[in-house]
Length: 246
Image 1: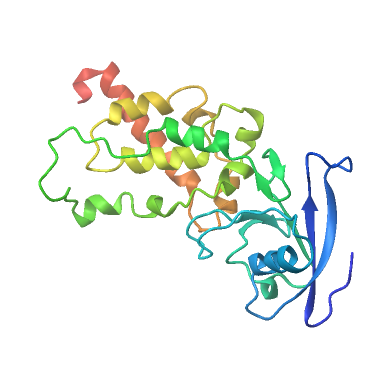
Image 2 (image 1 turned 60 degrees about the vertical axis):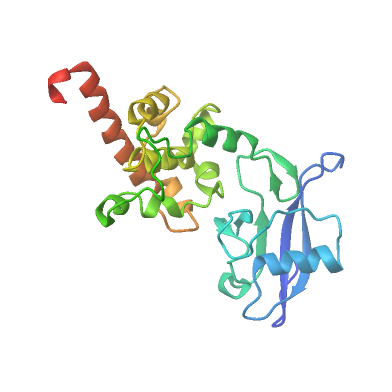
């Protein structure tokens, strides 16, 4: 690996092209860096000036869209908000682990978003639509405050051993969003939501390993939301089986 000078950083990237006989391999580039240079900035330097074939995802460049989630120096991070100056020394960038690689740092997120769609990620009201808006009190809103900050970057999904072991497991991101809508005071299909997540590949596949919490670049706690959803699901199931608990 190349050594880094004061103004230059050695950026090592895991490369993969399905048509390349070499298979996955590391390639090191030297990039210019200031204290404000992000990993995403460095990747653009490589793309623009050294290798036009480099593939990676990005969109908002503001840590909001989740597109630039990668495995940087052994941790799940957002390339757009990770400064080279914070990493120290040489930098190794890999695609999200345990995900099918399409090319270089771009992974296939199809299954991730299919599972997200399964939990019906939208409010389903049972009351007539109001003329202006659905009103929530501060107390009602507080139940879903943190869960709405998930940016669907798939870092938690990539880090979860239960996902690695079972391809049908919904995963922490989908379950976090299932909690978000189950706890929403405007939603009216809690029983249906409980039915979706109560399967063998749903809630009960989570073993509370906390990899998801450690991996989240937005400092959320997906494991906590999954546990809250387990309590909600258990209570709702008991209501069905033991009517006098209603």
